[in-house]
Amino acid sequence: MGFTLGKKVCLLGLVLLLPALCTSQFIQSRATYYGSPDCYGTPTGACGFGEYGRTVNDGMVSGVSRLYKNGSGCGACYQVRCKNEQHCSDEGTYVVVTDYGEGDNTDFILSPRAYGKLARPEAQKDLFAFGVVDVEYRRVSCKYPGYNNIMIKVHEHSKYPDYLAIVIFYVAGQNDIVGVDLWRKDYQEWWPMRRAYGVVWDMANLPGGPIKLRIHSTSSAGVAYSVQSANEIPNDWKVGATYDSNVQIN
Image (cartoon, rainbow, N blue to C red; front, side, top):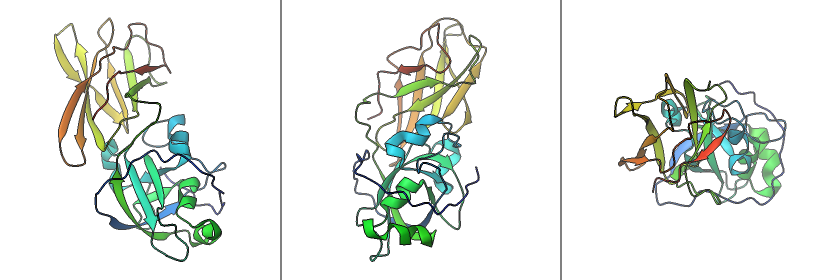
């Protein structure tokens, strides 16, 4: 998606930093920000998160280009900090990837709330005036207080009972979702769902009955892992409803 750069300074209070620190090395890059009327993210991001993509992590979110990875990079967490000692805070900001965006040789196009956290409190206006800053970043583990399990939302484009599209939320750790299978009891085998875009997976001509899913992931260390949902999506699933998988990727 395209971004419109703005000059709005968003004053930030204390927020809960969801990702935990890790020991990975920092990578050099650049970051900018996009305009937002309330300084949060956008609900129309390319990852398909909807309103979750606007408010998750207290709105400290980012669009990425190279790190988007055809959608598997959606939901990843990063620590980003700028490098100008006069203007930049020591810790920087922690962001969740919720969108695709390309900037001026940037890896991150941050929400205004996230961009403002790069700065020392007295230097926010100056940092926003720069528009683009040199940064360093690293992947960190995602943690979501209050959400111990992966959650699965039925996307609003689903059409009961024949077409199901789902969105996957709250994936912990440093894990990219690379595949989702749906159990076809009529064939007694797993069938792969299609990645429609971002984190949206879909399938038409569904079998009857409750829906069982299997989620495939790859960690930042390259370890492949699959987990089967302990809870099934009920037979009478509703568009817009969110269901608890009762599993997590550890």
